Image 1: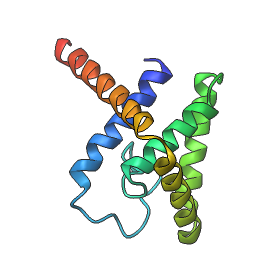
Image 2 (image 1 turned 30 degrees about the vertical axis):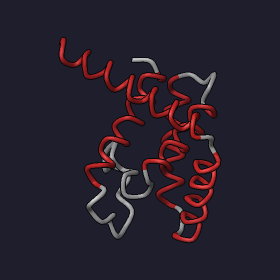
Image 3 (image 1 turned 180 degrees about the vertical axis):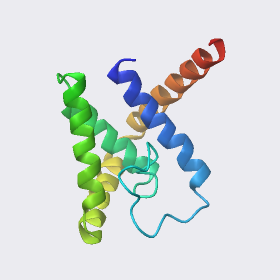
Length: 127
């Protein structure tokens, strides 16, 4: 699976799982690093995750798969190890940038995500 497909799958999974967790309170402490691929659910809102993934996608353009994986791990480690005030500032920046996006750009990002998820679901159904 290419990195683009993997990144979109991660974004889609985060967004889909976030709606299921919306009624649950976030954990009191950040999850452990080995908590699996849902690790950032309690730390970021779906919109914040969308901006973070967009940033990471831009930052890893032109990198090898190993470099991309190392970069993503470094970013996860940095986010989880932030102090509460630093994390709040980081989240506020992500929120501000998401809110500054034009509505058509937000909807285009969501449409791409939904199209990717639909294609992924049809691929799984045929396997």
